[in-house]
Length: 303
Length: 132
Image (tube, rainbow over all chains, first blue to last red; front, side, top):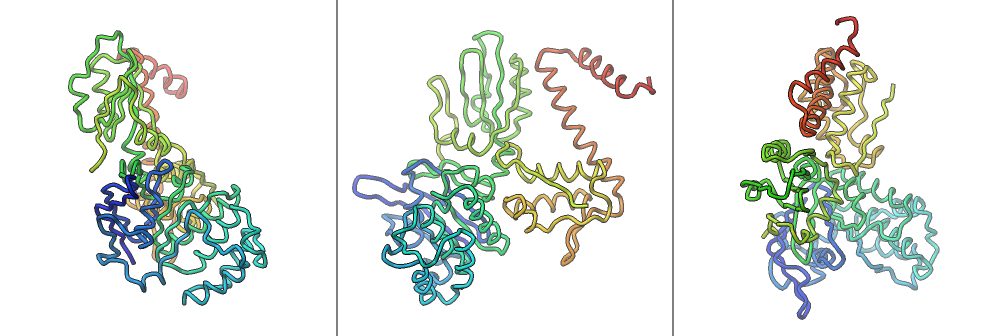
C-alpha cells in the first residue's frame, strides 16, 4: 500500500487559511519530503491526511478510498509536538503501543531506544525535547507500518541521532515503505527524499523529483556590455521561470535546457555567461522568495 | 578491493549522476576491475545515507550503458565482457564534459574560435610531446 492522493485540500481556522487548494500525489514506496517556511501548512496537511483535522474542502484518499479505521494499523505518525504522557515511563508507552497495534515489536522499540541512548525506565516528563522526539521515532519505527508520516522527525536531535533517524528512514524505504516527512533541515531532505513538494502559504509552489529539479533548474548569469540590452523573447520562453536583473547583470532561472538558454543569451550580446548549479536550498529559496524589485517572476505559483 | 564512493548531496549535481560519474571514473582508471561486485542498493544507500531508489536509478543507468550487469539474487558486477569499451566510453564521457565547459567558458570570455584552437593545440602539445 498505498498511494496517497490529496485533492484540492483546504483547511481554514477562523480567518486563517492554513491549507489552500492543495493537490498532491504521494506514490507508494517513495520517500516524500515536504518543505516550507514555518506556518506554511505542513502540519495541517499531515493532520488532514490522518483525519486528525477535518478538511474544510477537498479529499484525501489512500489507493482511491478515504481513510478507513483499520488503516491505522499500518500507518505510523510522529507528530511535531510530543504526545507522550508526562507521568508514564517510556516502557509504559511501549506496553501501550503493544496493546494497541498487532504489528508492534517491543523488542525492536527497545533496540531503537538503546541506539538513541534512552533509558526506558525514565518518565516522559524527564526527557529533553530531542529525547521525546527520538522516543516517538522509536515507537513509530517498531510498528512495521507501510506508511510513515513524520513531522520534523529530527527536531531537537544531535547530529549523530539525526543521522540515525535518516538511516532508519532509508532502511524502511529499502523495504518499500512509503514515507512522508517534513524537515527544516533541507540537507536531510536532499539525502533521504526522492520527491519533494515545497509548500508556502498553504499552497504547493514546486513539486518533483529532487534529481530532476536539480538537473533542470539552473541559474544562467550573463553580463551585458551596457544597460541598453533586450532579452528578445527570452522573457516569454517557458523554460525561463524567473529573471533577476541588476543593471548590466542578468540572471535567468531555467527549468530546462540551460545550455540552449546560455547560448541564446550569448547571441544577444551577453559576455561571461555561466551556468550555475542549484542545490535544494537554492531551489527552495527561489521558490518561496519574491524576486527583487527589478525582477520579473515568470513562473506563477502552480494551481 | 572495496571501492570508496562519496557523494555530496548538497551539490547542485543530482546524486545519481554523481554516482554514475564516480563509478564510470573508477572503471576508467581501473579501480573497479571486470567482474568486481558493487555494494547492494540498500548497502550503498545506508553507507552514503541517501535514498535507495536514487542508488537503484544510478545502477539502472550504468547497466543500460553496459558498465555493470545485475543478476537477480547475486548482485551487480562490473561487466566482464566489453570492459574495454565501457572504459573508453566512460573516459570519453568524463573528458567531453570537461572540454565542453572549458570551451564554453573561453568563448564566453570573448575568445574567438581560432584563439581557443591555439590554446587547445598548446595543451595537446604539452601532454602529447612525442606526437608533435
